[in-house]
Length: 135
Ligand code: B12
Image (cartoon, rainbow, N blue to C red; front, side, top):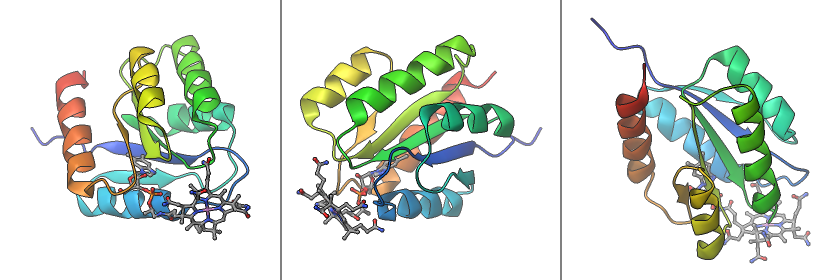
């Protein structure tokens, strides 16, 4: 049986315009054979989680360089729990200090990637996670 391609929602939450990283990641994931939906700028956590449900994605990837990660990730996690999206990975990257990454990982957020991360590492993390968790 052929495997369905991995579906990823790449999201930008907040009012800032730092969309370069999100676009770079979206295109690398596409090149790796994944189906990628990019939300565009200025989304709210509610918009992101609703889009993820409607698009039936395996992964939500949030790009965040504004410093609002400690608010945005927990809010998205909470909404995902309410909607029982246990089989969806929440990951992301941007300007997130190491100590905040650790705290967010402890809350259940997946791996977070800092500037300069090799995109191959991100592709391999997402592919492995989905292979291990897809029902
Ligand atoms: C380019 C840039 C801009 C550009 C944005 C262009 C654009 N369309 O994106 C412009 C000039 C517009 C800009 C403006 C501002 N910026 Co600016 N900007 C940067 C800069 C220099 C580089 C960001 C970038 O594009 N990197 C290249 C991309 C490819 O890398 P990346 O996004 O980090 O992505 C990598 C990883 O983080 C990760 N990743 C990222 N997203 C995702 C998503 C997923 C799903 C995954 C898995 C991984 C992942 O993987 C990527 C590959 O390795 C950073 C400094 C820095 N060194 O990061 C400051 C920076 C982000 N900017 C900053 C600031 C303050 C601003 C302004 C507020 C400045 C001002 N006073 O006007 C304004 C905001 C304007 C606005 N309305 O948004 C601060 C943010 C501070 C903070 N968070 O506390 C930074 C950190 C600079 C600094 N050191 O102070 N900026």
